Amino acid sequence: MATLFDNTLKRLIEAAEHLDLDPRFLEKLKNALEMTQARLPIRMDDGSTKSFLAFRCRYDDSLGPTKGGIRFHQQVNGDEVMALALMMTSKCAVMDLPFGGAKGGVMVDPHSLSNMEHESLSRAYVRAFAHVIGPDRDIPAPDVGTNEKTMAWMMDEYSTIVGKRTPAVITGKPVALGGSLGRDDATARGAYNIIEHKARTLGLKRGARVAIQGFGNAGMHMAQLMAADGYKIVAASDSKGAVHAPAGFDIGELLAAKLHGGNVTSMAGSAGVSEIPGDELLAVDCEVLVLAALENMVHKGNAGSIKARLIVELANGPVTPEADEVLKAMNVVILPDILTNAGGVTVSYFEWVQNREGDRWTLDQVHARLKTAMEREADAVWAYAREKNITLRTAAYVLALSRIAAAMEALGTDKF
Ligand code: NAD
Image 1: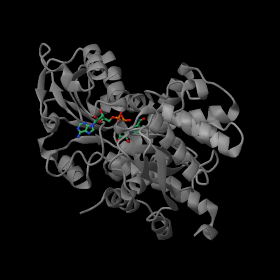
Image 2: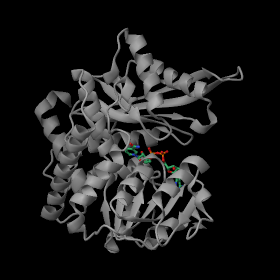
Image 3: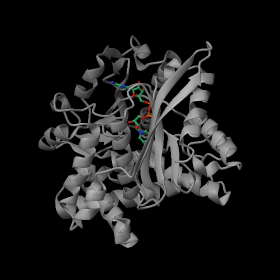
Image 4: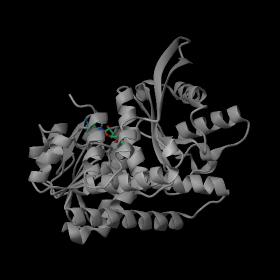
C-alpha cells in the first residue's frame, strides 16, 4: 500500500511533468536531506521512567533554513514525518518564503501526559535535537498535539543550551515570549483570505452551507471566520463523532459545546441538532467541505459520497491521490493543502522576522501582510492551473517546484 510519503512524492513527480526541469533536481528531492531519530527517556509523575521515539526531518534547504512543526501523536512514524517535511518544503516554496521544509514528531498520546510530563518531553526533545535546530538552520513550530506552551518550553531549553536567549529558534510561542499577534488563527484566516479572494471564480456566495471535519484549532477558527461573514455551518466532527444542523448552528453554542463539553457531540439534543456517525459528515448536503482533521481522511472508498462542490484542505494530505481522481471526475474543486493552509507558516515567518529584528507588528499589520501574501500566491497558482489546464493541486506543486529548482540551479552543481 502506498504510504503518505509515496503519495506526496507522487504529486511532486506529476508536477515535474509540466516543467522543463533538469532531472537531477527531481532526483535530489526524492530523498530527505537529513532524518534524525532519538529516544527520549523522561521521568513520569509516578516515579517510573518511560521512553518515547522522536524524529526530526530536514527535507530540503535549497530555499533557506528549514521550517516545520512538531507533532505529538500516538501514530507518529518516520514515513509520516518525512512526508510532512516534504509537504512543508513545497508549502514554503508556494508562499515564496525564504525557508526549506522540515517536520518533527514524538510517538506519544499527548492526552495521556500530565502538564509536567509534557514539559519534560518537550525539553527532552530539544536536548536530543539541539544540534539539528537553530534560528539559521531549522526552526520548529507547533502541530497536532503541541501548542504555544510547548514552544515556550522548547525555546527556553534551547536558550539554556546555547547560553543566550534565542526566540527565533521556534515559532508559535506565546505573545509574551515573542510570539506574533495573529498566529493563533493564521491557518484558518489564510484559507479564508483565498476563499474570499476567489469567491466569484468559485461561484461561492456568503450564506453557503459548510461542513467541517476536524473541529480542532484550525477547524474552529475557520468556523468562526466563516460564520461571522454569513456562511452557514451545518455540520462539524471531531475524533468522538459528528453533529448535523441542517438550518445551521449557532456558532457561539457550537464553540462552547466543544470547549466546555470536550467534543462536538455534547451539542447533540439541542434544538435542530442531531448526532450522526463521524464518517457520515462527508455525505452531508452542503456547498463547502472543510477538511481540518488528519491525513488520508478522504479516500477512494468514501470520496464518491461527498456532496460539496468545493473542498478546503486545512489539514495536510487529507485527500489521497486516488480520491483526487474520483473528485476530479465529479468536478469537485479542491483548494490544495500546500497553498490553502499555508497561513500558519506565513505568520510563523512573520514571527521569525520580528524576533530577528527585535520588533513587534500590530495585529492589523499581520492581517494585512497575510492577506497580501495569500492572494498573491493564490493568483499565481490559479494562473498556472489555467495556463497548463491542470488542477489547483498540481499547479501549486508546479509553482513550488519551479522555485525550488531555481534555487538549486542558482546554488550551482557542486551541491549535487
Ligand atoms: P487539532 O488537534 O487542534 O485538531 C484536529 C481535530 O481533528 C481534533 O478536533 C480531532 O478531534 C479531530 N479529529 C481527529 N480524528 C478525527 C476523525 N477521524 N474524524 C473527525 N475529526 C477527527 O489540530 P490542528 O492544529 O487544528 O490541525 C489539524 C490539521 O491541520 C492537521 O493536519 C495539521 O497538520 C493541519 N495544519 C494545522 C495548522 C495549524 O496552524 N494549526 C497549520 C497547517 C496545517
